Length: 310
Image (cartoon, rainbow, N blue to C red; front, top):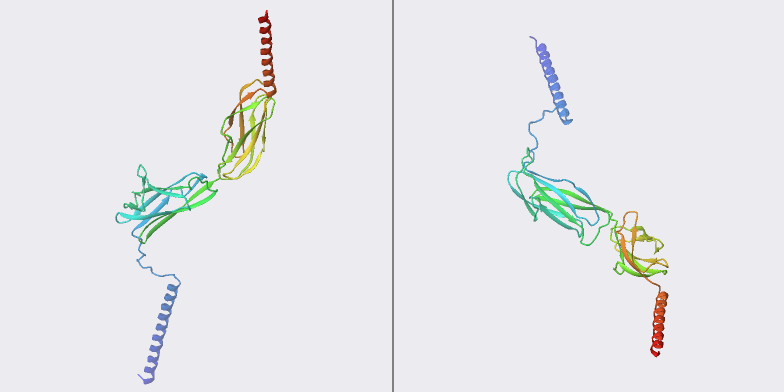
């Protein structure tokens, strides 16, 4: 074999090795690119470890609606999926100045302090479950304005933390009292004359009263009017005095009568006010009666004197 042929064979061999090397590098580069694009990658059998212990806090009804001044009671369920019994810290942050009370639902409700013990629950049976009640009460003697009032219930132990938001929706309360200014449910009037009685309308609700109107269940021939009528606007907590004018007929018989006064708005009607009215005879007739009695006495005296002289 000549020297030139050997050189040719060696050059061919080097060329073949270079070609195979180039193809292998391209495949490696393609595999690397595909791996970077997230395709055709063989996934490992290793997954992120799931939490071994966790806590659930569930509000049965996280949003409650009540009229202003009423109490809100939320029912909560706590489930602890852990390895053993644990004691958790609990806390409730309620609306400013509202009273917050937490109770356990153990048949008869027992007050809960700032800690609660939870047994281990079974994910298959969802047992045991600790039931809690969170009560939110508005400030004593106050009726909050309509709106949403938030509270947050929190449970924690180290890195374990769960919370739930509770919403108390306060709706408008339309309410007012209707009563005599003197507190008495009876009065005296004179027949045939205007007699005056003062009553009050007091807004005991949580919203402005608009257009409170008045009426009466009167006897035949009686006249009853109100001033002012209607009361156009009344703020919560305020009272408005109303003058009632009562005029019995001229010839009504003296004695006791009953009339009923009513106060109504579009949203609310107060309890009717039942008044006992004692009718007195007019003053002039009283004097006439006295004069008649005196005349009779004088006449009898004259008669007795004349008979005595005989």
